Length: 61
Image (cartoon, rainbow, N blue to C red; front, side):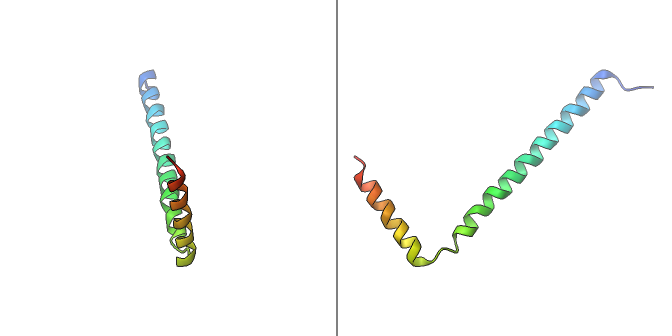
């Protein structure tokens, strides 16, 4: 006995949803790794960046 057409469509849709979830998980893992590499910035460099940001915010009305 063969599978009904509805069964095949349901299996294909579930596989597509599973693939999209895996892709989303990979993107989230890569996004979470980005800030950890920025934590290694020296203290002086991060202070300079903060001062630059303060000046930029002061210039806005």
